[in-house]
Image (cartoon, rainbow, N blue to C red; front, side):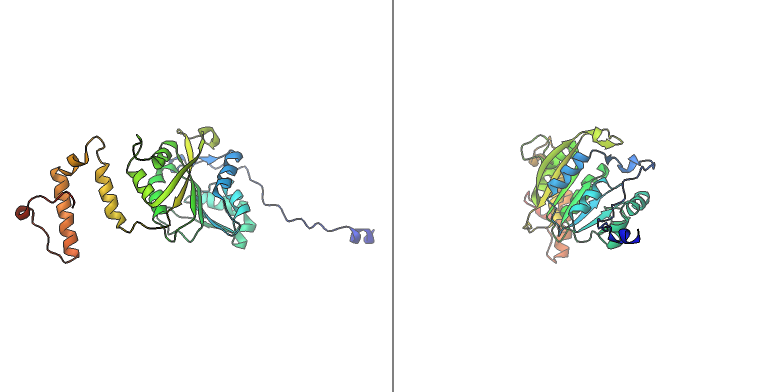
Length: 276
């Protein structure tokens, strides 16, 4: 019997990853915790991300880890940013081998305030209330990443992808198109989430442009904010408003002082030219 036991082939299969556990924690919907529960949508997001085996992937708001599990199968390393410490603990419990080996890193901080480490691709089912500030932060991130595949509220996604002349074209559309190329990938119904949100969703791919426009982005954003502040007015009407001209004059004087150049006086030289 002893010899027969020694002759038996050894099981060389790798230990299985811990299966998803039934988690009874309440979802905090005020933080946008609507987790994807459709595995087909999860797989579609991963497939459209075109992840290489050498990539480092940044995931925002991983929650219980449905998307994280698929990313770990594809990428060399996954970095998750999760604000809710309850779900941070669940991720470590679900992926002990990956966290111990360094393949999975979880950062327990706010994605808007944290400094992102290096990454090649960003994949996220975003909390919808941080869509605008997160997108702006992502577009300003350096060094440039290869692409980002993000879940947005449907209306926000359509404004993000809008072209000049479209009804939904806005400041967000102009700023995003300046720094990146945006592609609408797929629509996602509310029943694919748990708990279901009140709105429909869409998945979008953002690809940064390789060349920087070579201007002060803060100044550009201030100009675009003025232009889109009142969409029913012409640009001429907007820039003829006294409060707008006064603000532009103040800004010009500040800029001149910083550059040590003589500033124009409003009383002596009249209104600031429209080109200013």
